[in-house]
Length: 223
Image (cartoon, rainbow, N blue to C red; front, side, top):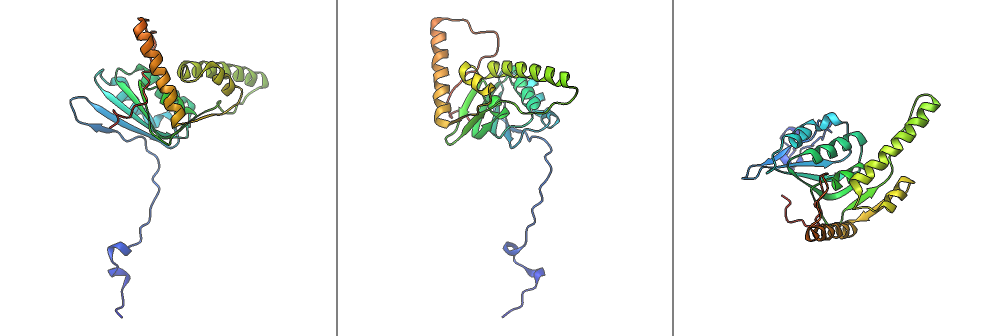
């Protein structure tokens, strides 16, 4: 029997030590084509806003002919970061397509609904719930902050989630209920929204000034 020294170990026998690198912000994927297409993958926890400045800049400077894809697989995270992402989506001249690829909970669910076109894969989940946080300061200051944040959150939910969610569902969420739905339910709601929009177009109704969600359960446009 030959003696095998560790220095002559076969490549498939080498020990591999994996190191976990710290999160340094999103990586941008750009496809060169007549139509400029940029993809971002929002995976894992949504962290502080400084990690997403490159995406904010891309959204703000994009042209009307650009396509920006946001692929979602996140349990949520920083609420202020999520709002900044949503506000940049709304302000963007580009067509922003949000793609649900696994789960989008909490803030990630609101980001999904902010897209101009919504795409959902099979075997995915959305979850909506009320905010969580902590308050400090004098008692009267905490009470004032609780009231202000509660009213603010209620407006945010209404502006982003209606008509995907009903007013009654948002009311239950504000009272502490968690709302879960799978791909079948998500697709059903998106198709219902699309039919309502087509009906409005046929009736000749004028679209509101705010950016309108162009909901679709199709997966044909994804890169």
